[in-house]
Image 1 (cartoon, rainbow, N blue to C red):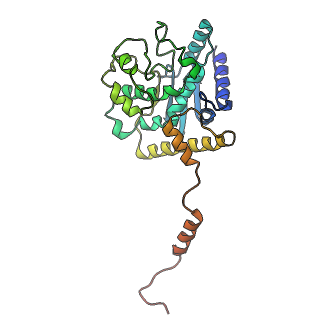
Image 2: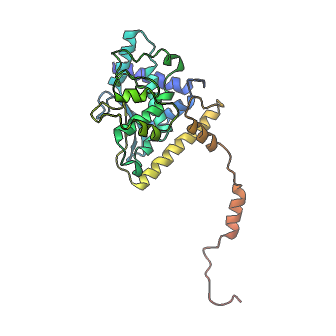
Image 3: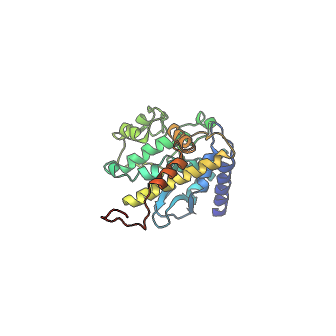
Length: 284
């Protein structure tokens, strides 16, 4: 079973990397996925589904995938005789958390007063708008008693009922798309039950020093820039991504506005030699 799951994950990773840009897919996600460090196994402590996190020792952004969870997805789809696009959905879910900088923002100092569970759900509300193929959205039924948050990665989706019928379900089903996670946080915070199951994944970050946060920021920026450069060699479109991310990716590929040659020439002409010593007397 574990061999089957790992093979399915490998095939889906390749599909995301090799796919063509359209209204549902973006090879940019696959390229970013190829640059993440994967930790895959049946017994990953504290991760029942999947998660992304920053490894302080290796300085890597880790993608954790619980193979028992993936097997559950596969078995459900086999039983229902459905195409198992959910394996790709969970991968895209975690990739977009990285692209949207949620790994870093989850640890920000000014967000410590925010509830982690609500913050996690709010970030999922942003991400899940970009993980499902559009052809499946109209077919999705929230009335099935078999649906639960540990089967479907798109559990929290703005404007769609989760089928639970609780207060959070009412709020989520009335939410508009396209908001930031901070805006979703404010809209759902009064409806989240502290004792509920919560969101389907986690953002494992822990306490970070200012230096570690800067390293993480630079790491994410480097991954996005390298992925953007690689994508431009085979496509002129980033595909289905949040608009603010598309704007950012467009800026990082633009040539610098300053003439670096003139700046370097000015710096060299104004620099002083380090082997000269000043004196109080006028030079002869």
